[in-house]
Image (cartoon, rainbow, N blue to C red; front, side, top):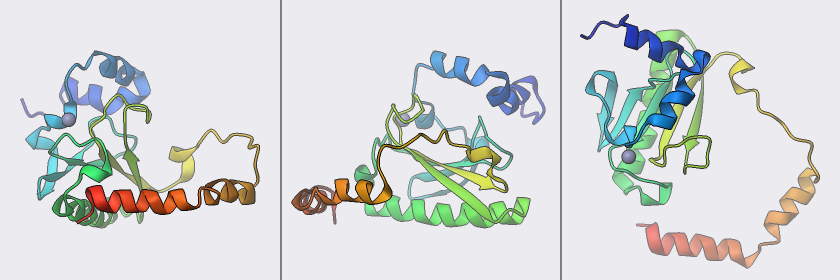
Length: 172
Ligand SMILES: [Zn+2]
């Protein structure tokens, strides 16, 4: 039953390559992160879990997932947020220990439009040993870095307002 080389385990292992992953996501009805399996969990702190990714990009790929169905960073309690930091630290250390890889990419998935059908916030902890895993589809840009900076800076007071609104609604 807990055979690490069962047919199901092999299907998970190869799902990103075989294209099965896409089929699986389209048929999943419930939130998979509200229903984490104990046998994949590596560590837990303040209701935040460090677990193995069933559909890994690379061996050693882990996820940090809050137990609660949170949709955004603003919903974390201070305890949960501190636990995320601690689990990021642990993830980086054990990736180095187990795989000898010093680099980690933490990728936060936030919202159903962020390349994922899951709205439950989670962080991918991806061992990073070579850039082949992170080939982005860079676009030809319309604006220079300075123009991009100016577009945000032009928000002026709105930036301060956003910060104030955050601190009032979600701060401690
Ligand atoms: Zn959930």
